[in-house]
Image 1 (cartoon, rainbow, N blue to C red):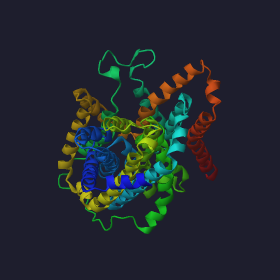
Image 2: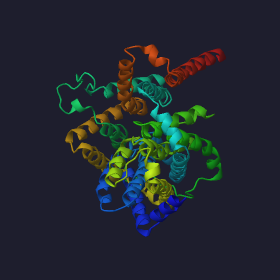
Image 3: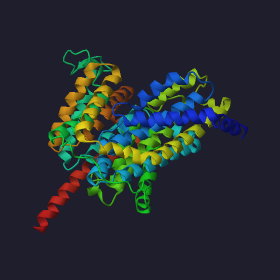
Image 4: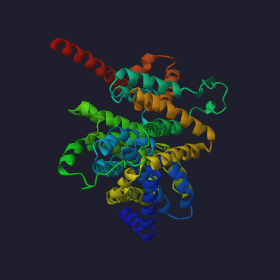
Amino acid sequence: MDQIFIALGNVFTPMNMAMMLFSVIAGIAVGAMPGLSVNMGIVLLMPMTFSFQGITGILMLLGMYCGAIYGGSISAILLKTPGTPASAATTLDGYPMAITKGQPGRALGISTFASTVGGLFSALMLIIFSPLLAKVAVSFSAAEYFALAIFGISLITSVSGKSVFKGLVGGILGLLLATVGIDAFSTTMRFTFGSKYLSGGISFVPVLIGLFAMSQALITIEEGLKSNKINGTVKIKRVFPDKADLKTITPTVLRSSIIGTFIGAVPGTGGDIASFISYNEAKRWSRRKEEFGTGIPEGVAAPEAGNNAVSGGALIPLLTLGIPGDGSTAIMLGCLMIQGISPGPLLFTENAASVYAIFIGLFIANFMMGILGFSSIRLFTNVIKIPSRLLTPIIILLCAIGSFCINNSYNDIIVMVIFGVIGYVLTKLDFSMSPIVIGIILGNMAENNLRRALIISNGSMSAILSRPITAAFLIIALFTLLMPVVNEILKTKKERGIR
């Protein structure tokens, strides 16, 4: 109990509260800028944290972490341009609600509420269940990681849009893109065509920016850049979700928060995976599956609750085992060690005050994020009032800057433009971009862990399939892949029977 009071005294100082507020604001700004990822924001902030002693620097990183994850939903909803990879799934229903239905305030309000609840829920789970969830996550071997990746890939049938076949084609394209580069096991060059740039694989962020942002800019250009047309003229009547929306999204938010926290606790995953899985599960449990993608509340709330819940989940293996849950917590691991805090089982006994301070800081960061989000929604919606002739060049410029900043490489800009054109063509052909993204994200994870599992089992697939968790994931994946096809067949037979 004494350690808790010490932690409270360390956190609630004017300097620490001011620095956390600054970092949350900066995080929201970074997240809202297409191409400026959460990791980039943390890396840019990290040198500043070294000038502070004690827990201040850690609290600033937590503020940036939470703010940036939420900030990605702003541009995803208003511009169909995910500010971070974790917000890609939010575009599916967020943008149609804001633009097609003319309800930007409602979309941002639902997003802010879901993000805040997801973040606070994961912080609570971090405190209560961190030892238990850490044991579950650390028990995963290569076989379980492979099965988890296959389960994630199977979700392409649920985010395929109107055509499951086109979704499968997009998923295969994403998986093929994931094989580009040096084979990690044999060091063989694959699909590099003699290019040194491609030997390191295709950078994911430029691909994402191209598929979602650049392609949308090209579509806007094609539509004539109506210079006198304002993109949005709907006035914001309220920013907090009304009772009907709260009743509708509460089960989805809670389910997605649980999913996001668990996925965050599994090292090597992240908010992008959590958001797509949360979206798929929301669709699976919904009574109006056919309305997903048209701008319904559950479609906005699910990915935002899921990706924000990753923040607490990812800290579970970091603090208890010293294993970062994602790229952001990997950066935090280095910062913690520089500050003299060594994550691991002994941390809870040797430096309990710092652990409690991190717990409290995560709560405050998410709470600040919610307050700033709701108080600034009317400001955010002004983005859609900018004429297309001004907004489109800005988006293209941000796409170029965001792509270049990843590796300081002009090649990334070229990749972004190429995939912008690919995304434009596929969008015109009614392809969904989400299966491609899922294939790229999970392709390497599935391949590498399958090969590791086969090496461990001396090439025996039976040794992999006999593991209960692996078998469960693969069965669910098979069910997920086949159900849309079966439903389509049954629907066709029913229509023929009526005729």
